[in-house]
Amino acid sequence: MYGSLFPRKNGCRKTLNWAGCLFFYKGGKPMIRLEEIKVPLDVPESKKDDYRRIFFEVTQGSGRLMLMAGDQKVEHLNDDFFGEGIAPDDANPEHFFRIASRARIGAFATQLGLIARYAMDYSNIRYIVKLNSKTHLVKTAQRDPLSLLWLDFEQLDYFLQAKSIPIVGIGYTVYPGSEYEPQMLREAARLVFEAHQRGLIAIIWAYPRGRAVSNETDPHLIAGAAGLAACLGADFVKVNPPRVKEGDPHAALKEAVAAAGRTRLICAGGKEIGVKDFLAQLYGQIHVGGAFGNATGRNIHQKPLGEAVAFCNAISAITFDDVSVEEAFAIYKES
Image (cartoon, rainbow, N blue to C red; front, side, top):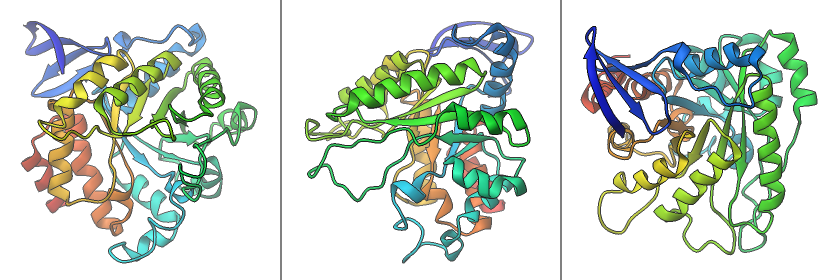
């Protein structure tokens, strides 16, 4: 994951990573210095301190992100929220907010409508506003995916100026390979710029998809999507982890992490799997593949409140604190 190592100083080991951030390791935990966070050039001088503060807060000083993803009420409709194996708590959208307000996370991503309906009671959560979404009803065989902007910064600025809700960034999904990719790329590029103009971070969900795409999880294609997000200027890019027929799937991430450059790559959590299996997968993505964290939805919110909070805390311990899988699992069991 890391590049050249430098000598220890005051008990710290110093290293420069793919994303160009200077990291200090003390007691096994990665740390970054606020003043050494690289600020994109499209962030105005007057907003650079805001950008540094937000980046530091959402990564909890680690340079990595634990994003709780809550955009599935649109993306998957009610399929993820009601049924066998899903906690009854999950039927109510407020379950998202109850988890995010109690758990250790970097930020919570959802649509502005839900934020407007619930955030007055959950102002302690750092919010990423998901600015586009679509349902899964229209399949690729029928039509290539198209997900356009719901709201722009004219509407979002109302919330930013009120300063009562801690909105720290925006999210947007692009579908490379769709015949409609030009429209989405144009919107995404402009949104990243507008976010940076306000000192916010920008996260791109990058999912190769469309009739021209034969294998959505091909490692080389995932790397292409990660590089595309870098060209959009994103701070983080969320991708589905690649799948391989042979070898270590975590090692297959390395090409994408390198392609993303200073845009930090995070992996989607995917369908629900066992807690320990998920933690081991995350550990491998970070320590073998070089990923900068995760964006997890179903594996969190389909659990009852207490268990969901405990699971978030375990995920964050790996992401932010560099603990082992066994240590993280113990945190989950003890919470």
